[in-house]
Image (cartoon, rainbow, N blue to C red; front, side, top):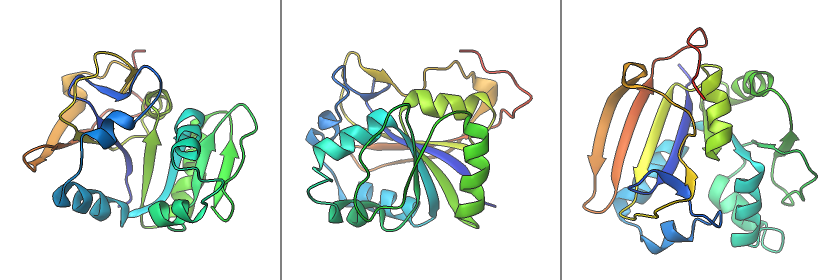
Length: 194
């Protein structure tokens, strides 16, 4: 059955971006074949994805996607992407982008239809993932934990989710990175604590 997954790279102290909204720390942490294979296997099962405006803007600037739109396809193929934003943002030429605003529930329904038998990936940021969690729309939280301590920045998920709502389903590592998979058992009947 298709699942909605929040897959994010995170520092050891729980941040997905530094205080300047940058992910440069992640690229400085390096990579490994296992890390790349882990993501490739995950992404092969993704049929739709969603990100917030700050995540999209960072990708535009970091990878110079308006000048090099082929990079988007290299990373995300033809997977449709919804971008939550309150302002006009430039689209990456040739990318299947859908700029949206408002309640995540209606967008989630549309994403599930489009994804078909595949999963929905919540790319980030943490507040957007929190909105999905508030409505019981996240099935799994997948973390690629990097060997970095940032000391501050953008939190993984600025919500309180307690142990009874999380079940550790898988743990892997490659000597540098730790990969954790949690099942989120809370449903929409359980109120989120912001």
